Image (cartoon, rainbow, N blue to C red):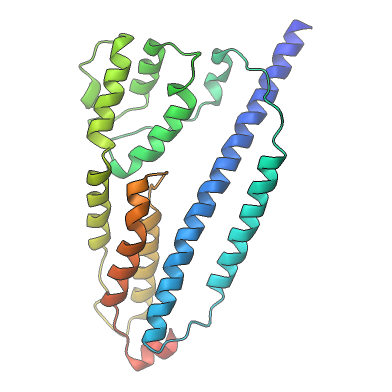
Length: 243
């Protein structure tokens, strides 16, 4: 009977984790969709100034998708079950899917949010265990940044602070994103509709790249994409008609 209860508790806890992951992913996708929507609406305004009418249904479709996502998220939160009994921490080790962090500044927010949720805030793990898990999920410059620290309980928070100071600074991450945006290939031929569409797609993709809750990156997303892309585009009459 005890084994059955423990097994049942593990199953319920696993379902709760999957539900939380799905809810977080939906919330993230809604945020990304709203960012794309604002980019498209501003781009549509810029095109109207140039005398180009957008006959596509992208904006309307995106409005509909965001609305459906928000309603689903609300229903999910309202139907959330009562807290389930927690199982021993060791039972969850196989359920943890923490990505490896290799030192990419734009990848830090996503990595740290996941690691923090699954390991850092879990009181079932000791500081030594957390430091072991942290080392196991670091490569390249990130791994070298803390490789000299002995494996002790006190050094776990030291390692976390070193990584945050080096890879978690919003100002440096913002500069890195701006540099990548400015290095996107320009449209050199005004009659190249494919190049124009590719530029818009790449700029929008870069705007959402590895955001993961970073307030600094979210804050620069809108002016960076809209105000930088639109002045770079000059359309001839034939291209305007095709667009």
